[in-house]
Length: 191
Image 1 (cartoon, rainbow, N blue to C red):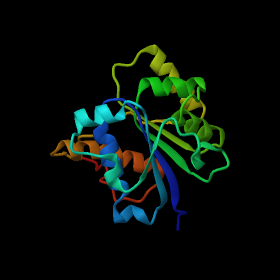
Image 2 (image 1 turned 45 degrees about the vertical axis):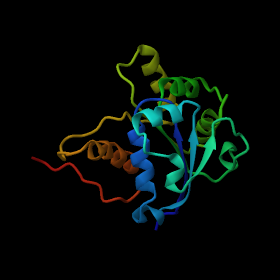
Image 3 (image 1 turned 90 degrees about the vertical axis):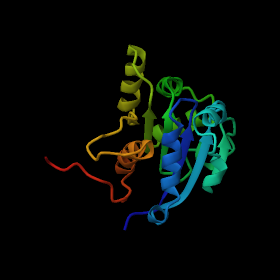
Image 4 (image 1 turned 180 degrees about the vertical axis):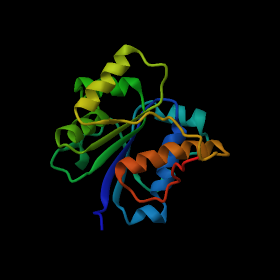
C-alpha cells in the first residue's frame, strides 16, 4: 500500500480555472481520500478575479481544503524540513514558470516550488498559454532539467468527451498518473 500524500495545489493568475476546479473536485472524492493525508491550496493575487470571470459560481473555500495567500511564508510547506510530497501548479502562468526557472522565491508559490526542486520532490506545472516564445520554452527546459515536470493542459479526444468538464478531466487524469494516484482513468485503446 502506498503512503498517503501531502500535497499543495497552487493556482496562479492564468486562464484555465476549470483545470484547478476539476482537480480540487476530484481530490475531495472518496476514491482519493485514502491516498491523501492533506491538501493545501495557495492562490496568487490575480486568481479571484479570473475565477470570478471564468467560473462565477465557484469558491475555493467550498472544497474543504485550507486556502493560503501567496504572501504567507509562515506555513509548514514553505520549509524544506516539511513532509509535503508534491506541488501542482494549475494553471501555471508563464510568469510563474519564469520566476521558478530563475530561482526567484519572492512569493509563497515560488518558495514552495524551490523547496520541491531542492528536496527532489515532485513539482508539476500545468501550463496553459500558447503560443510559446523561446523564453517560455527555455524556462520549461530549465525547470525540467532541475527535476520539475511540465504538463501542458492539452486535453485528449480519443475517449470522445461530451462536455467541457469531461475534456478538462482528461488533463486531470494525466496529472494523477504523474502523481501515481490510482483513479481508474480511461486509457488509450488500440484501434
